[in-house]
Image (cartoon, rainbow, N blue to C red; front, side):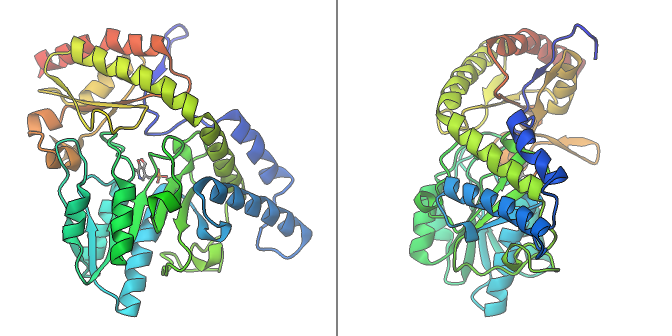
Length: 388
Ligand code: PLP
């Protein structure tokens, strides 16, 4: 990086920097309070106190009991534990064989559901998403059968920012006696995640999305929900997630969640204003650009677009050359760019879908960052269109 070039990070949905207050809370867990929280001696018990305090703080934020919180090694692992754990437990008790989900989910969910189908024979129904990436609760209602064991719908989309009607889906799942899992990885610190209000049974979080460390997540497991652990080993985390617990990570996650919740109202208001300026600016400055995802029911920091005839991955590289970090939704299969499955499911033709780009704002961003993007983007898009 050149000494003078200003860099603009607009990829907070991929990850966030760790808040220095979080680092400060974590450091003693590596140095002074370093015991194994499963050990009976005082070193272990000191670590156990720190771990249980972190668990109680997370529970308080989600409106649940500490025993309903399991720390995991990532959001991916929390989703895996929720889905595989619930499916295997249902298989064990012969409760049913059917899972309902949708094409908008993160790979942590889609790949797990695919495996449950392919390797374990679970029947899967994918309900449609509309042109904004939203699931219709009535479609979920219609998809639920007598043998349905689990519904999985994310709280908010990483790709297109759309917020799902989780509380409505939760209410109907509860009414039908079906477990409801939501991947809230993108929503934490941005939306209210009170598990009672949302009526969810399983909810996944990941610390690095809300200014906490990488490599630690949470799965909320409502009391009474039976899970078969996806990992085998010791009895940590009530047997749900064997392995010595990452105490520093748990403390970091809890601290980050506290801070994010305290900042949430003011920060959301600020980011929404910036986001709307970014959206209006991009749509005004770039021809053949569309906002992807819901225009209103969307994450406050999230702006995603499709640019016709542009490859999102090339656009990300072009913007990186001028010091701007963004993200593309397209993946590459056999050398050919492929639109993200959610965009195809939303009805985007491939020449639009491969041109997906996401700009996600964060605490350090201000108007000058949006202005820098609006300055650089039209030329980058135009250049790629000519080059293509
Ligand atoms: N779910 C969603 C919606 C995500 O955006 C991500 C990360 O991008 C994950 C799950 C996975 O979380 P982690 O990076 O902690 O494995």
